[in-house]
Image 1 (cartoon, rainbow, N blue to C red):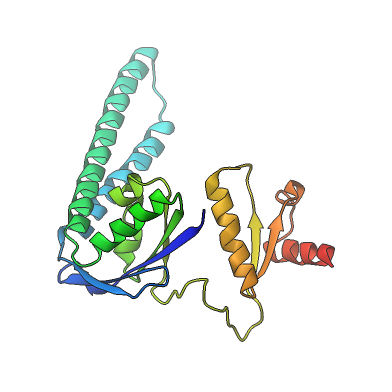
Image 2: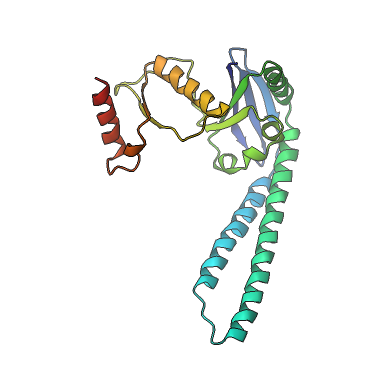
Length: 239
């Protein structure tokens, strides 16, 4: 299988006036599209963020409390548990509202959604992995729960990556006036397909001139060395 790289740029516009969207699948020509205005989405995100932060504040407030007797401790414990449950339900409700509004908004997109879904379905038939680079400079767009997008939920082979709007993809030469880009890669114990896909991405970066060092030695992970020092040590060991 191979990795199909899809670039989805949502940058020009606003939630009040709508966004311009451009889509590029692999080496095909760009497709232009739009997303409609949705001024309620940033407010729903703020509501969810406030409710989520309230969970942490409630925990800190109750963690240090001391009761004068066992009876009062039991009553306070019941009240705290009820309050915690209410906060959890409120947070879940605000998240579901945000999730539904985001889904409805993305489903109203024009010009780009159909070719995007087609590319993902064709990749699934070929058992190819898909990496969608979401390019945007909008701070609210970056914070939305994109993992809840049905295009990501319904197709496990799709991985969505946030990137700045100037991103050009690893298939173009890496150029810099300050020497090679250094990448220190530390792997976990995972052996699933996602790790294989990550390895392929870093190998492509390496082939384009980036300095990529894989870290197989788990002893270095807990060492007091800084990342730059670890990189230098591994580079020296390679010579």
